[in-house]
Image 1: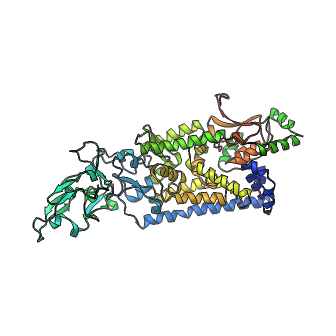
Image 2: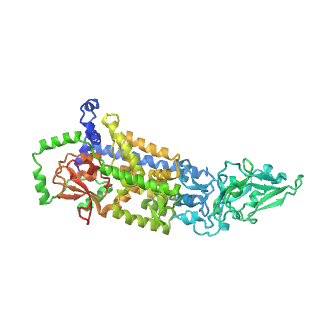
Length: 282
Length: 319
């Protein structure tokens, strides 16, 4: 099993190899003078070194396994996963990181996580404050696009989705609870988020920046909820001294699409979506 | 026998001297004796000659074109090809990288039907096109690693860096270990580290922090070990190598004019496949280069005696 190849790979061999790739320059003799002479190794020594280097390189790469697992083990990132996502661990294991769900989403609600999330690297998630899932695809396109079943094909309607559940995170800032209304475009003129309004355009989501509201009592989160009053409802605020004070109440039907979080005009938002606990995801 | 030997070389076996040669090959080998002066002249000629880059330029055009197709398809929203190089849909047809799909199956102990369709499509497609041709004609990491290799060679030429070759069997070991890790932990370490996926996603969806990992890999290759990821780690390359074992697209070596000066082995990413060009090695007058060959064509460009060229088995010498 000896071979001439081994000769090529001696210290002299690497010089030869480097000469070769730049043949025009290898002709210049001045280069030779600069080179440090290297110790010549026996074939056996070379072979041992090749094995050691290979072993160390392989070991080094395997050391990345616990590092990549760390963010997952610590649950360092609580991400909202696209509709149909399996429980976090199985979802990450099943995701081939291709981005087909990212591509088919008509409102670009789905983006990639970065490598700081370890095994969550390049797995898709939804940042609903920036762009919520508004179901304007009507068909759960992301699930249909997923080639691996990381997004399970077992659900078929928006009501069955379980991304997370909304929570009134800053009730003290809620306009409705203060009895206030809302006029103008929510989130300002530079906000790039989009939302479908079937009365304006049946097929395409329109930018929120081009869609002013005029509400006597702010109820944008309730008004624009794609699920309806089984998910969120505006109710009178019982123990308030403010006349006409109302409050949004999140109900069992909430799927966590995040439209309420995106549309809340307060900065920061008064209502957020928390990812579902592991057991709640299909 | 020679097929099995070539096949074993994909997994890390060292090339060896042939046990027997055909009579015709013996005659040609015999004729080369006493041509030392001629070959010396040839080597001087090569040193002064302009290198042609015909196949390299074609290959880079295809590689950039394929990756750009993904990018443009996304940015123009034409849905020509969706996804990235790990898995995609081309005009609605599922495509999935074979090894990545294999890991997904190991992770979830279940074979998703769309993934199976995609993987089989890729298996047939690249089994026909030529296995590791994927590496040199499509893989975006191959392109940046090629640039890294140029830099490595420049530095090595000045004695600043030295190549530290490794045992090629490590690629097979990594193939198994990445699979075992996935089976045991349910998570896909390889897909997290895969520079093909990282670069493919970066070109389509925009840059990410993960590119730092790719830069680290490149730095390792420039400073320490030439083409280390492709040669010693990448399980995708190994998988394509096996897929291309019967591929009709081959590099063919013709013994007759060869001066055995070894220019081809110096530019080759997988030089062990070209050991048959060493003086006295070729078993026959025409030999197909083994399945680990990436069909990149660098050797075809550099060969001063036109002893290496592309061929499609069964199509004669149309190329």
